[in-house]
Amino acid sequence: MNGEHNQNERYDLHTHTRASDGMNSPAENVRLAKEKGLTGLAITDHDTVAGLQEAMEEGEKQGVIVVPGVEISTRAGGKDIHVLGYFLNFNNSVLLERLEGLRATRDARNELIIRKLQDLGIEITLDEVVAGLDRTLREDESLGRPHIADALVRKGYAADLRDAFDRYLGEGKPGYASLPRIAPEEAMDWIRDAGGVPVLAHPGLYGDDDLVSAILERGRPAGVEVYHSDHGPEDVERYLLLAERYGLIPTGGSDYHGVRQGVVFHGDLGSRHVSDKCVGLLKEAAGIK
Image 1 (cartoon, helix red, strand yellow):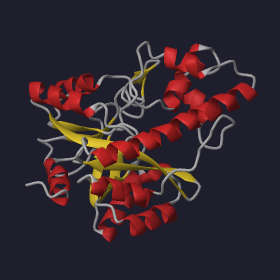
Image 2 (cartoon, rainbow, N blue to C red):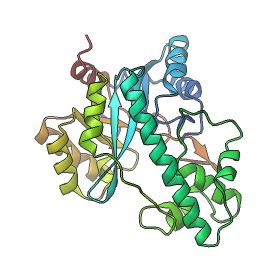
Image 3 (cartoon, rainbow, N blue to C red):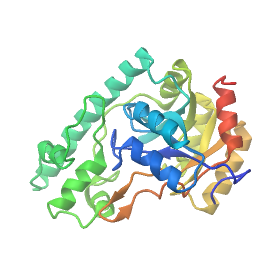
Image 4 (cartoon, rainbow, N blue to C red):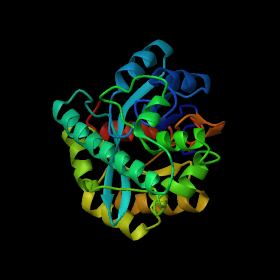
């Protein structure tokens, strides 16, 4: 399942760069989108908009439409819930301040994960994780669990990224940690405050459709991510019906993070996409002519 409507114009509305936990620079994601024949893509890094300016500039050069986005980390029902935001003003000072606070929470979470891993007898430090980036981490960039997973693989504690999550870093695993976060509906308000359009990300990953419905009812986002690399055909069918029930825009994207240890995670860029109609509806919801 790749999306709907006019397949001549294709947009991948969920991609990550090294501004958070992706492997590529924002410009590289844009060039890859061009190579794959996409009309456009969204850059949706975790709790940061640091990669958007570079992506927008490269999009101008390549003739690729870049949708400015973000993916905000929230918590509800004992689960980590992600909220996507599109067409937001990424220079909005209030938004930047709020995202900075979220990154501080993420930093504290990372330190807790490292301590948990050390308590398991794993010799790892946060400095080693950062050193593995082979570059200086900017203040407005975000360090995530995939970076810690990379370090576990390099040090021989896991075979690959998936193994690191299955054994240590996934929800419910001994190295998992989560600190109090804002609620999904608050993140949706933040996105609207910055002129953007909120969308609930990958509902199939939460394993609780009652919780998903409750979030949609409370937060009233403009859309729900129906097409995602980890959604099978039954998930797509189920969330299309949910989108119809709540009058939401069915969006989609690959959740591309780049290639780690030879494996694309979650899916290859462009492997999930939507048409220009979906993008047009998001723009309309944002009040963009």
